[in-house]
Image 1 (cartoon, rainbow, N blue to C red):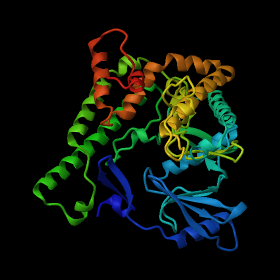
Image 2: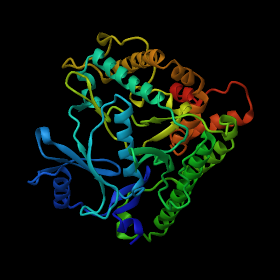
Image 3: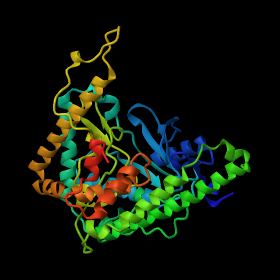
Image 4: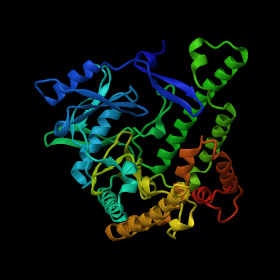
Length: 432
């Protein structure tokens, strides 16, 4: 049994890469007892399984107004991830107006009754923005945009000088915050972690270089797994357990990914010539509709999922929040012009086009709001498209659907032709 399996985690080969799996069942009695002690309640609360994430399992504790959530996490980045998440949420509460859950208790080590790291926090009331999207009128969506823009303005007003994740340590004045090793998923290697450099980094160039090094280490490990699986399949020497696994990644795709990494490394100096320290801000990189919760009236009730968060250079942080990304559509679709079935139900294409239109309008509102709150933020946004293209390349280097486009973009850059079409523009226009 490998060390990762002994700790409760193993990586399983799938078509989408190596994915984490629990190797032990969680003890609900231990979770209940831990929650009772953490919440300082004399009688045990009922617990109920709530949800499962890629790296976590969530349980609700108690009922009604006393309900809390305890989240159990896999042993990935032991101590760092939990410690940083707690520090990040505390920082957001102190320095911004964004509502986030109150942390009630946590343990950032596995030497406890549950056997894993855990955080107990207040349960945020309301629905996810994704579930409530079509229930909300457009004015409510505009209010959410203004609140998120205020958060971006707050973080921009509290700039830092280092790229990494936040941590707390006690001092004579209470808890103070510092920037340490990055917990960003950009540095996740689904294999040996010892040689991964996580910073903190003082320059964007060093940070980008470290990300590409981590991506290369991760890709090489996945390629070894994929080749071994391919050989085992060809010789029919799989074990019973291995035969139950899903088909693994395509070795050719992974080899192409390594080529892309090499080409990106050759472009670093062109995109990031500076090696001196530069301003950074805290950024929630995963502001999607499922991490934003709203009340029945559409008001923002909380933003969740603060794991893996770190500070980023302004060229990356100054961009649209993820939940308003989408295709541009400046004209509102007319419902009557779309096909309706025999029951009068409109074709799904109408709702897709309506969402594109609404997101387009919300992006305009977001930028107008940021222009009023932080005109300098807008300046950085307008001049950083080239750097954002490079970030997109790092995020998508191993996506088979984007490899041809990435290689063509890199080839155009290497040829030295002027006015090369940007990567994001190619993606939006669905062109090579």
